[in-house]
Length: 148
Image 1: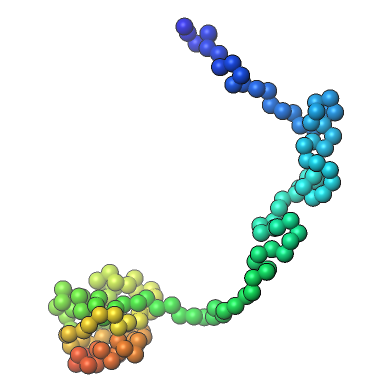
Image 2 (image 1 turned 180 degrees about the horizontal axis):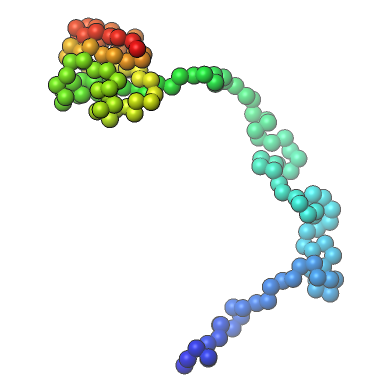
């Protein structure tokens, strides 16, 4: 056996159906597109969410909520993270620069301190915003809070 004897398996190769090549082909006339309507015409493309003329789902459902355009998104840092950072680095003053150096934030977004966890050390914390509970916990531990 060599390359000159190779042939595809019987029945595996079929001729391509030539649509729209006359009535004698069996696929002429409407060219398998049926009669009339948008789908039978050239240039037709169904729009996203189209449900055959039925009112689409995105129009049936009620709209609600409000998203302000100028909302400031804070990067959240918890008291647990501050405690861990103060312990490993041995520092008592934590600001944005220290948080960036520790890899907790990237320095581009404003920082908000949240109250998850306990704070046992006396820390001077500097951030853009504080939750009320976090501010209370820092002050109770003997630390101070500075808003940038």
